[in-house]
Image 1: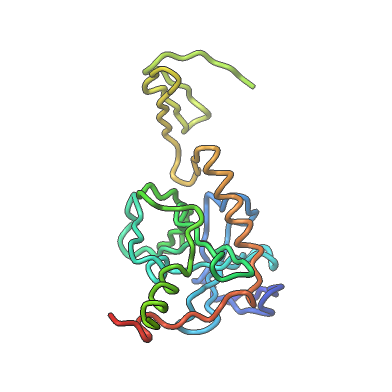
Image 2: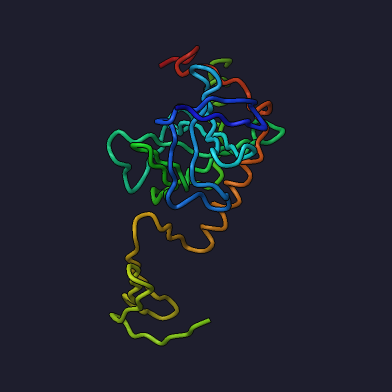
Length: 140
Length: 78
C-alpha cells in the first residue's frame, strides 16, 4: 500500500511504503521525522527530501561528490550509505551554498544528520564554484 | 536551571541512558564526554544553531530556483 502526499511544491506524489526514511533524531530546526527522497528527473543534480508528515516541508539535497571533488566525511559513513548535503539557494548562482558541515546520511531507511569533522567542511560552501571554474577553464 | 559542581572524572546521569562525564579541565576549557543513545542528536550549541539555520534555509528553497546542472563528465576534460 503506497501513501500519497499532496505536496505544496510538487502536487500529488505516490510514495511506496519501502521508500520512507525515518529520522529518529529529526533534523535541527525542522518539525518532521519521516521523509522520502524525490527525484524529479533521472540524473537531476538535486533530489528533494520530502516530509511525509508535512506537505509543505521539503529540502533540496545534492550529492556532495558531484560538486566538491575533495569532499570527505569524518567519521566515515557506514558502507553502502547514501550521503547528501542540504542546499541553500539564492538569486545568484555564485551564492548557492551547500552545508558540508552537516551532511545527511541515509542507510537502510534510517536517516541522520551528522556533524562532519573533516577539515574544511564548510557550513556554507559555494555550490557551483568548481563547476564554474571548470567551465571557465574550458572557455579559456 | 540545575547547577552542579563536578571534578574531572566525575559524572552526571540524565535519565536511564545519558551519562555526561567531565573529562578534563584546563584553564577556561572543560572537556566533556557524553554517552547517549544513537538516536539522540548531540551538538555543540553554536553548531546546532548554524545547522538549524541551514536546514530552514534549505526548506525554503523554491524548486524553480534550482538551475539545471550538466550531467557529471559532460563536456569536462576528465
